[in-house]
Image (cartoon, rainbow, N blue to C red):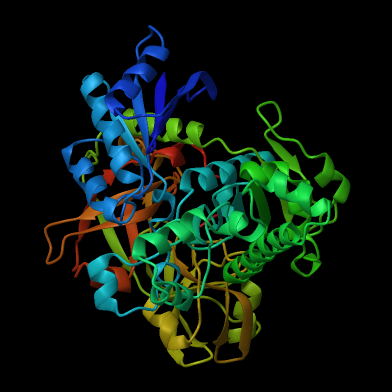
Length: 583
């Protein structure tokens, strides 16, 4: 497949023709001083050569609140991109101009929009919400969207591949450090926090962007007599490394000046590193630990000195840098990943060469191959899973006494599993929930599954996890008739999922570990559930499991069912799927 990747800017159009399966660039170029995007696109198409193009993939900076995947361009998608231009007025109009020119020039070729914001579009509410009046946030779209999504997604997948570990099992911090810079917390394959916000201005110190500043600074600048446009230009174009050091925003120039004793250059380097280290520590705390740190983009890939400044004295997190490996690290097409952590470091530290264009090409190719959303081959029954507990034999003995047996009350839908007669009480820091049923048979790990409402009542912060993945999850105390047991981990909000047999999965074109969307229609409230994990085993019967909060949101009654409306894109290529714990 030949994919033309187009990045339409204000005065230039960058393009590459990529074979997404081989991962190779066939043609690349840059059209500068663009005044007519139609002419620029025509030049790019001409440079692509005589062989036909299968897809045109367009980088779009802002997807607004709607897009969490790349999208096949139609009039509705164009309208949504145009609506999001209010959030990215310097970028989306130019992206749109490129899309319209390419559609006119290649009317028979699928056009796909790939969004910088899409990877972050399912950030948890606590991470995406600003502490502003809700009515303003809702009306004006004031929330954290995040950017550099294609880069963060690409390097995370490359890191997992290099480490030969499923991305779904990792707590990973991706640091995209270039003229634009951002940090992304990636927990179990998903963006859970990111430093850029509603616009790319928030977060780290960048080449010419200020990053985090007190909002009072903006007010002070406005009160000083500067116009809104002047303040905008100051914060986006005259600040960051350029504003701190003066003269140049290029870190290589600043490092040379610092070595010669220039104090402004030294300060610029210190502020940049300090801000990055703060975010690293904050996101490690937010994820409850850290498995991998990835550094990428121009500074992250090339500046050993800046990497050392950011990563020093982090032994308390289990991160130990190897100075020799760091100094020697070189990444590129032949060696895209270099390990720079010490052998004894609990946290892996990698330098990964980013390739946003390849990620864009792969996303676009996958969208076209998947086709437009199609209904699945028949309804999927839905079961509402109330709070419950899974125990090891040892934990059961503590709670119910030596020799006690787990007795069956009734079978439940999945073969071999049952609701038991026994119940325990959950005791949290804030409150308790009594009479929570134990499900059998026994498991190798203790696991307590609650809803968000239960979590609030107990006063705990339980992560959303796939069943069996309890490492680093929340603590909880269990009370039984014979004793009390404190679990230091094991409390989760279960990732909504759908059980399938291999035949059911094949009929729907999905695999174990994929994530899909399932639409609930025909009831009081039609609702589409995203991020539904597919679990495939010859022991399973077809059924989707959701918790009580999710069922209440859709006002589901007995006998509810749904349709698979969207098959996975890159997740089907193994980006986050790996060997999963047994159910």
